[in-house]
Length: 86
Image 1 (cartoon, rainbow, N blue to C red):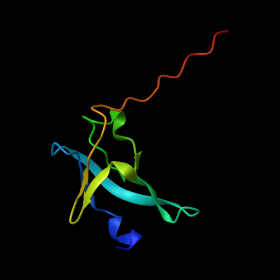
Image 2: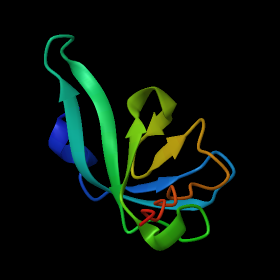
Image 3: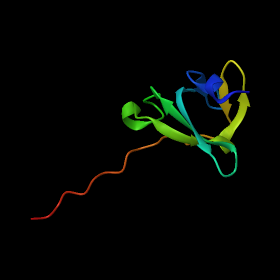
């Protein structure tokens, strides 16, 4: 399978929830393997703000017309920035 075949594939959890679609693939050149998938247009129910997220490739359980993840957190929330004190 070519790395470019991952681009734009829809990604789902193992429970059938839509996560987003693959925007990019990060490679580990030294190990000669796929390291992470960058997911874009993420489901706001799963990812606060619909931000792009990096998913470790070890979470991928199946690849075909779609990608199915063996694991994905119930919800990803962005860390709150602490206000600077004067």
